[in-house]
Length: 340
Length: 121
Image (cartoon, rainbow over all chains, first blue to last red; front, side, top):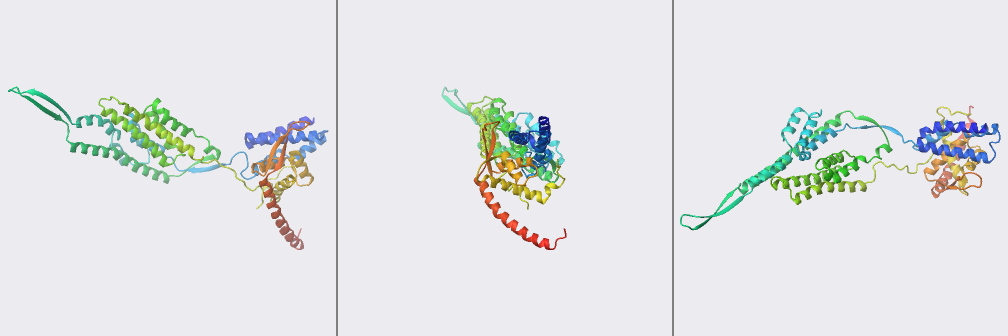
């Protein structure tokens, strides 16, 4: 009978202690069970009356669990709080990323970005038109065209020798191509064309963020631990930028860049550096591959592409592991139970 | 069996008792290490505890804030026992409490004497 009493008591305690979380529950039940075992050793469970007395003195499971919970900030279950976050602008950010650096992905990169941008409620039609017209295909068009244009622009001379009517040898030279001034102007124009869409994107994105900030904040439930543990996003970004450059060229590292922007663990400066590294290498790859005429890709071009993504990934990885976790809370040494 | 009344946790005496008991535990551990059961019984003997089971969460808290440390020791009869020892941080906290408690107790005593003169209880 005494065993039944004890078992019943412990079962009730275990059920009540469930609110402490699995660790807290296990610990509390183990300690109380240990107490009962010690009491048994001391001969206090000799009769049913004595057992009831012991369990009485231990107290109701409610009380014990309440004591485990009521200590400020000490309950095993971290407090659940209602937080507010400003509405997310991730869609517009991704859209503009696709329309600028993502335009490197042939055909679909810019297109998908434009489509997503048009679905945004935070831009006026005029702004959307502006972004679409400046300019179709995105800055990467400049890169894609640089090959053929470069071909036309390069000065090419062929020389030949011939015999004229008197039998003397004449050598002559025939050159095609554009003058140097024109070439320089074209390069300047190309640069402007490259940067213009980026400028438009940045301006519009700023407006989007300003407008989002005016919208009502979105409530969500969060606990301290839930915001700190998962690094999936960051790990995926790094992997996509490094291994993804080779496994999924173009698309892989681009998704990695997007994930990096979606992360809260990297500063904006870090994100720009990584994006720049990746974009620069992709540009270099395309520029040199097209300039090599009809897509005969030189080793240098491959190197350019292979380097940027992994470089960005490694940089981000280092920055990630350099920073302490954002929300690893250490309880410190609170003063327990003072009544003040 | 006594059930806890709503609002009882907010009862000043409950808070007071809890804070005091923690430091009483520390005082008991200054000279020797003790295991849980022993500690609980000593406190109960001093009339400081109504519900013995609540001492264990209290001990757990003391451990978490680093005022006591524990280690397991084999016992001759039965399962290993957890022994509690006070840490330097705990001793420091105890010294501070002693001083605060004396001041507090003296102030309350003084007020209570005045209260008694005009008491309507």
